[in-house]
Image 1 (spheres, rainbow, N blue to C red):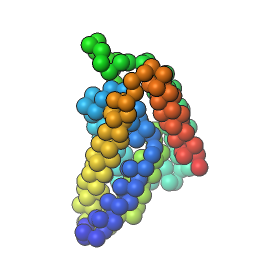
Image 2 (cartoon, helix red, strand yellow):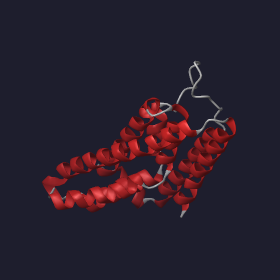
Image 3 (cartoon, rainbow, N blue to C red):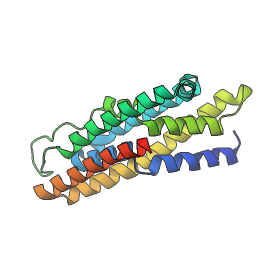
Image 4 (cartoon, rainbow, N blue to C red):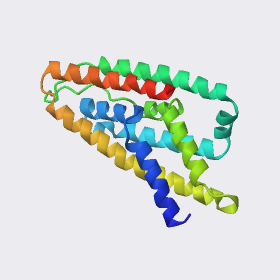
Length: 200
């Protein structure tokens, strides 16, 4: 893959990765509630889930979604329900003083970050768009998919760290139970609002 094409692909992937969406809302809420390092498994789960989606798209399953619109519709429905469930969990998260000696509640598990990708139409569209626009034909196909994979990992690390850091900073500013509840409800509503993006 030529450098100019790779940089163009990175620009496309960066816009898709950094803009608000289910992954970034979840990372921000997790960073605020559990801190930067305790949210890393969630970020790694999201990244591995994205890699699985890319490979599924690149090696055939993505074609089924474009051939059969009903599969895309079912993906949207499942993704919407899962996002609404996550939004409820975020909005109703228990208040936890960061200064306490007691261990905080468990962060969102690694596997839920990966599972979200399979139900996240934005992830499928990002992978479909990248493969359709930036993969090369013939013998260079596998190499170009490898370059896309590297690109997705790169932008996901940077954007994930930014959103986690943003959430962790907010978490330090939340000193009262009232502020904590308002933040979690707001993040829950923003996560639920991502459902609207799925259906536009």
